[in-house]
Length: 502
Ligand code: BES
Ligand code: ZN
Ligand code: ZN
View 1 (cartoon, protein in one colour):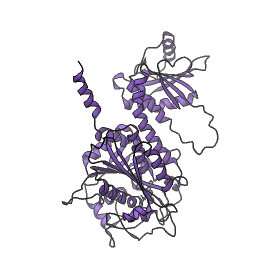
View 2 (cartoon, rainbow, N blue to C red):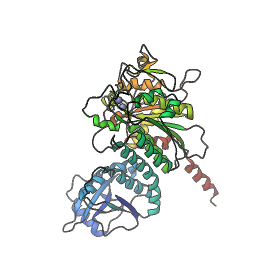
View 3 (cartoon, rainbow, N blue to C red):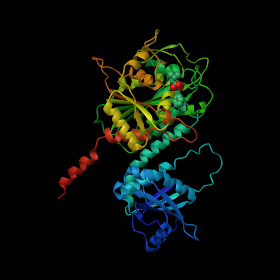
View 4 (cartoon, helix red, strand yellow):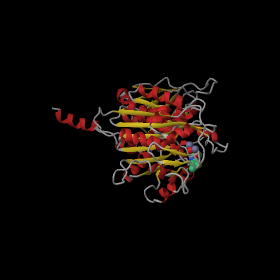
């Protein structure tokens, strides 16, 4: 898809999109002939009223040209969410016309809203054709968006595209198969992509992990021909002003066979997606750096391939994590929590974050509990948990609260093991006990209280699926950071300059 903002792109298009308000008034006045045509076509039409999200494709008799009416809804309710809601059916209708030259009559929308609508269309257009060798017969869409102020629309479009591109990159990584994406190739991709944007990227190779005594993460990766690694990313958009960073942590199992506790064959192919948490993290770093967010974030992704082999770790093994705590391996398929705990300890000890957020396709139980539409949020801080869920609702990547601090029975369950400090296979509800297990690796102060705020996102449901996958997590993380962890310098500056104006 190619997309441009222009003052007068009308005349040569194959498809003209006309945004309509509720009650079927065009968002900007139409020429008398066009208005007459639309009125004629809408006479007797019951289903299309201009309601938000409705689309109607009209054919001009005797011409190849088509018109798509796109429902904005009530004028006072037009916002980012309503425009994105329209983006989905509008893109579908555009695709169905098979037209390549498209004009959008967006003159009735503000520059900011025009940018959102344009961004919504590019987000919908995500596709993954890398391994389709046949030539695509459909012509590439060329969308020209008509607006009175192309420069203002372009300016508003840029930060939105930074996020959309970060999300698309996460999707590309998720769609990459296991024979192409392994800990080594993945780490290289992250370094290449992010260092170009000014993010400091450090790869902790197997040897480095050994010197940090990351016995849990090392165990998970030891059965693979590609050694495990951790990738650390640092982004500072505050010019050194923010003392403590926010930390993001992601599970990056590039393929999860289950290891010696081998998974059944059905749907095992989907376990290429077991790196979804890490993709959300690196995609967010890309988005933040590209839009130069005024915040400081450090991130770590734990990369490993969980394979059955003569060198693999076994059920019954006892591993010592970087924290010093020992873990009994009840099941080698509960590997996510093992790589995460060493990443959690590393980021807390080396970077002293005020808040830690980890994301992982962690448990099948999460899918049973919430299905594919919601990720589960666990937190030691109810405000942070609510902020996350609010960002989820706003961004469309939805999350739902689950219990962590409300009972100590899950904590008891993860400690209920005779030979080691903890077990990776606790009795009880799987997603909740996995969260309680991770909680044991949040560092404590002298009084025994958690040193930092922490939220764990079990995204197994939204992170899994078949076919072309849209990576989950960049949109909600970006929203959370934008709404809660970013300096609002823009507003202050605007106020200050107001006073200076004569
Ligand atoms: N990657 C899986 C979790 C998963 C399963 C995600 C199905 C999406 C769909 C994880 O590593 C795993 O296998 N977890 C086990 C843990 C169990 C052995 C304690 C699970 O949930 O079954
Ligand atoms: Zn597993
Ligand atoms: Zn896994």
